Image (cartoon, rainbow, N blue to C red; front, top):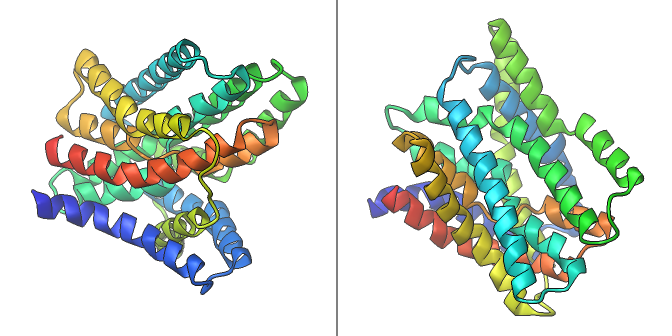
Amino acid sequence: MLLTVANSLAPVFLLILLGWVLSYTRFLSASSLQGMARLTYWIGVPALLFTKIAETDPSLGQAGDLLLAMVSSTALGMALTYVLARAFGMASTSIGTLIQSVFRGNLAFVGLPVTIYAFSGSAQGDSAVQTALVIFGPMVVLYNICGVLALLLSRDGIESRALTRMGRELLVNPLLLACLAGGLYAYMGWPLPTLAQRSLTAIGQTALPLALICIGGTLVSVRLRGNLSWVIGASLGKVVMMPLLGLGTAWLLNLSAESTRILLILLACPTAAISYVMVRQLGGDEVLASGSILISTVLAALSLAVILACA
């Protein structure tokens, strides 16, 4: 069991550590990391998502239940975080940042590789990965909408310009577009031409290692400052509270063991790095956002290990 857990998590977190070392020793410059991140976000991961989803069974029944569980757990996590923040006297302007740090996990860059490695070699491996991929598109939309609303409502209220920007960003979001295109391709039942399948697969294979190296590289520049209790609280909320809520949701919805495991993996992912970008754009608490990304990434290794060992 321990070997299985190590084999699932080590490739992910060793690559994150490698990225940190390469950036810390200046083997990779900040501009190099930025270029790698752009390549991964705009080309690598979309190619991976499209090819994987295009080859799925469009009638995959478990995906609907898993999506319902993800949405329900996310809503519960947001509501509970808000109640706790108010109860402990957090400044109103920081509550939106806290909420986003707790619910917005790094599904594409951490959740996807962990899911692939966790189910690798098992009888249900392909179907598990396909089930996880099907819900990526809807979750991209949900995370973006909820993130913007949480930040705006905790600051000055809803602004039409921010909502317009959010809509524009969703329309050009490469992950969402790849999911939609792959889903349409699968629904139409079209086979991928061998040339396209091999080319996109080769491109997609670069995505996960580059993404993980970029995550580690960006952590070098993160500095823990301010009220660390909120940073630690947000991180624990992300990697402990969210999976526990997911476990309760899975029990209520009577999810299968396979779907429950996927749900817990996705909910235990560390805070997504993109959340910091949104906080900067919308005037949130940058110190809390950056600190939560760093601490939750460290703690996620322990949380995911427990989930893989027990689920």
